[in-house]
Length: 290
Ligand code: NDP
Image (cartoon, rainbow, N blue to C red; front, side, top):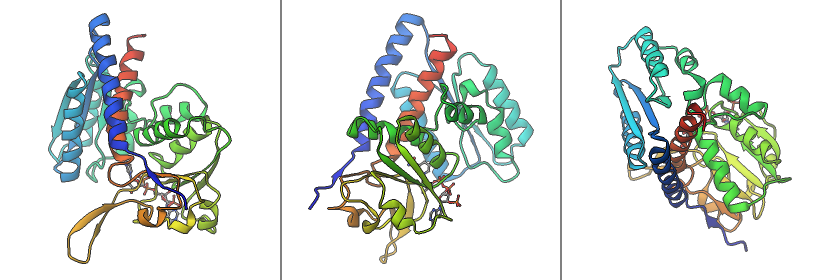
């Protein structure tokens, strides 16, 4: 029987933040450059407020400047666009993140498209998506970036491995597939119309689940010894009425089959903010021509 090892994303993210903090200190000392991240939050969504608070705290912890813009839910699209343009022009701001979801009266795509691509630390702008697709330097969406960082750390060379990515969203599935292709994996992208999904998943040396369906990927969908990256974050209600977070993979069933697996919580999640800081550092360096 295979011994399944968990991938400790929390520890990995702490290590990455430590390295970022060292690089920020050098950048500030040698070049007088303090990377700055602006986060825009519209409305009172409790989950978004927690994310934004965590992002701001970790930004300051690594020595960067954090600029928080909290706007009321009734903020108009025009006012939001005006703020984005102001941040685009602000030399102290190297990265801009507009927290999603935005209220229904705002066209999210329009707002994300207004962000200067060089400051688009979420990597959602079509220019960055295009640059990633054609193999140019790009700001890459944080969750897939963190997932592939961990894969390279644990597996080393990914060349020739068969990666199956379940999910084709613009923020996780597609960029994850692009990054794995860049690492010379053979990549299959599966989605809701894929036929015989279990059989497709069983071919994977690397299985990335980014679906948003609690424990959809069962143990017998996993090839023995495969590495499983569970991106899903799903809150479920237990029979006792309490809630808990689970991933898109049935974690217990994967034990003894997968070689490595990211737990939920504590796997991919912590890497997302760490990669946001990494992207802000990258953006600051590029804007300063370093
Ligand atoms: P989306 O809803 O945008 O995309 C889900 C994808 O899963 C779609 O491509 C969809 O296919 C596919 N899918 C849905 N149902 C099935 C099915 N039955 N079989 C196969 N494929 C299916 O989600 P996101 O990509 O934004 O997020 C995915 C998960 O990752 C969510 O749980 C989210 O909470 C989590 N997440 C976690 C982050 C983190 O920091 N760890 C960050 C971002 C997301 P189709 O295109 O055909 O509809």
